[in-house]
Amino acid sequence: MPNDDKGQEERMKAKRGEMIAVCSAKGGSGRTVLAVNLAVALSKSNHQICIIDGDFQFGDVSMAMNLRPVFSVKDVVIESMDKLTLASFLTPHASGVKVLAAPDRPEYAELITPMVIERACNSLFTGHDYLIADTGVGLQESTVAFMEKADQVFLLTTLEMASIRHTKQMLETLELLGLRYKIQVIINRSTAESVIRAADVPDMLGEASPIYIPNDLQVVSESLDSGIPFVWNQGKTEIAKVIFKMAEQLITRRDIEMDKPKAPSILNKLIHSARRLHSLKG
Image (cartoon, rainbow, N blue to C red):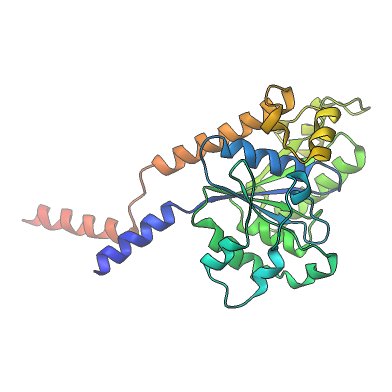
């Protein structure tokens, strides 16, 4: 039985969902738009997706998806909560994406501690292929908690000088925190008119391979006003194509990681070496 328990534990680990935190150093950079549309794009490949609205004071994920949640992340504060209870707190979207909404009042934000975030994420990992956290702006305690938990962090900037400056400072801080290796910089609205060229931003940030999302104010505005993610009903637009490509790359990378042969443990290596030594002596 111990071997069966161990095997089950390993299978559960293999099924653990991948977590992506969507962050920015400056407000208005497009975190929610990216989080929502990436989630729906991933769901189109028959993956189980959950979004946590981690902007606990003024989260807009529910608005961006035209949802009216009954429960929110503040309900996760209940100490006796189990996985089944948490599942009942999720609000389903027509795409199949499930949402753990932000509190309906900003004063509830202080109830959501890093311990609550840890408990919620651990429960949501099982049963979902991808867990996407739309975080608050900057390096709030909750945002850092999401970053530490995440497998990858999408850090958005725009062509505005203030956004680039703050993003550079945030990257430097994340380096000190030991989180820089998780970061994928995304230059949002990269085709917008600006005195700063998108091609110059990588050198300014010290980022070799950013992802560029084109500017399409009309599509994004219509999406937010209607509560319909643009990858859902405007999939042929250039901005939607970029999001679909991001989703495809995430899925491909995850499939490769799961197919990789696991490295033998130190104990297995020692046993193999001992057996080999014994056979040589014999």
